[in-house]
Image (tube, rainbow, N blue to C red):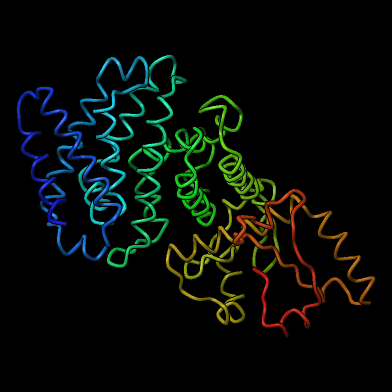
Length: 390
């Protein structure tokens, strides 16, 4: 571990030079190679205990300046290729981003904004369709995917996945990552990338806000799946996950006709939802007038609970998933329900429908399959098994 600390200090000294000769560049290459090896082998706790954060910050600042320099190189902009010494700048990040501390410092130091700009510098040529070399794309994918894994799994810095995704989207690097993932990946990198894409699918609220049409990530995803962006040699596992995200977005699309006909929670009057008032406490019911709201309060107060903004948003997202799934697959659900009713002699109102949007261990999301996978069972039997529909 002392070797890693010494390497960081030596790199800082070389980077302070106004000009670097060939010996400096070779030495820098060797030191960055050492960082990659040591960081990958280091125990997370030992890494945090033994490597001063200040040394990592100095390394991070120097790396950011190096990436900015690479972004303006004509050879990079015109060909998307870097020499072996320049590539090691990104490779050293792959090593350190196995750990959470460098990832946190990267966000605080605008590293990911600079990384996004680096990819965009190449994409900016040839009308945005010019792609970097596969080695560079794989490096960018590995950096972001490893940062994701470190940020949510390392013991001393557990972030919620959606927090990490929000930060990535804000910096612009999530949009560029989608492009990078289309390039054929090493097997280890594919596993890391799949973790991140599956995490995206587990954050439907984030997807509904940041991947809708007109948003950078949403437009990029659609362009990739339409064959208008990214590499045409995408590995099947990555394509399947991107298609699953697109399917989830489709399921969550609002039913405009339904939204315009939401009824009053008391009298049942249907009108434009803009003309109806929402309960300010639970945000879960609409009224056409204050008189209807007052008249209904005796019944509504039994289920009216104060909810936070995030809870309401999550509830609305889940409701949208349910509603849009049933809208799109109503006939399939009804056919299966009547078949079960005929077999059991029960009525439709005695049935429960289970729609599962959770990802299984094999990566399959049952509700997003074609045809969709769902279950129908008698309510009594269903709840006796201590299971509830999602």
